[in-house]
Length: 391
Image 1 (tube, rainbow, N blue to C red):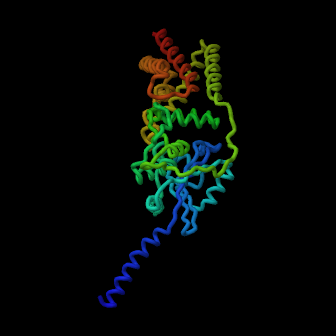
Image 2: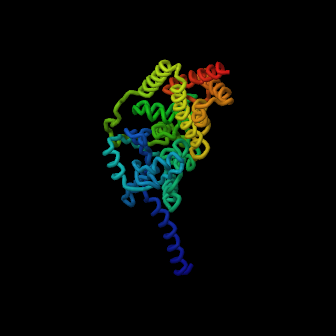
């Protein structure tokens, strides 16, 4: 073999060995950050982010899918308008771990960290996916409270990268629904009025039982799922640590305030109806007002079901009592119509079905609605009897 060939052979092999050895020196550490709930509604359910430390480059970056992509902040009115329409875009952002931690320290929210037990190749695969998601339009996604959020995105990255991940111990009881889970957070946060509003807007899809993976749409359950997950024959989580241990900023409050309010409101209407029972004009005004308000709510629920991108607002059984057609009846009540009796009979029967099937219908209703529904049923019966007497 000539000297030239020996030189080429040695040079080629040096290059081949040099490339992998350089790649092998790269050390990554990947962990999941779980943040405690905050006092504001948008923070009630906590938060999830991914932390990647690259010791070769000296970087410590948090990949956060919970960044608003189209409006300035949560106080911007556009935020709630887009959220109601189901058009709100969130995005993936990457920034320093220290900045991320400072934010939660200022908000007085605890943070936990779970280091994942992965090989260097597996860690690089996750980093490549996140890097790809930061490019151009890839960083944006249409937020869905249940199906696509800051917690489901990291969950799906892990499941797509490692299909052999298995949860070895159940994290929720059999028959648990998304509504049950979110109720726990709203009750702990004292968000009773928000709970009422959410129960009005969210349809029966939120009352279908979910599995452990489905429960991971909430950060705490994602954290719990990781603690009980294996990848192959080893634990997915290598270690768990508390990064920030802070007293919760959430202050307890009266969770029965909406129920107390609706009871008082219904009783007040009954008292007024009683004292003006012989005054047809007052009865018509009160019933028209009640029909208009419930009809307006029904229109909102129908629009949220049919004209928005919110999957969780579909199949809403609250339309059994908050009927959109009530608006038409409200303006026609001043003069008796032939179809009024038939309409009130239908409404009365629907409300009877709703009250009788309160615990058996495929949707869970907020208890604060019961006094209002009973009042509506009473007025439907009154209208039916009144129209019968006038014949």
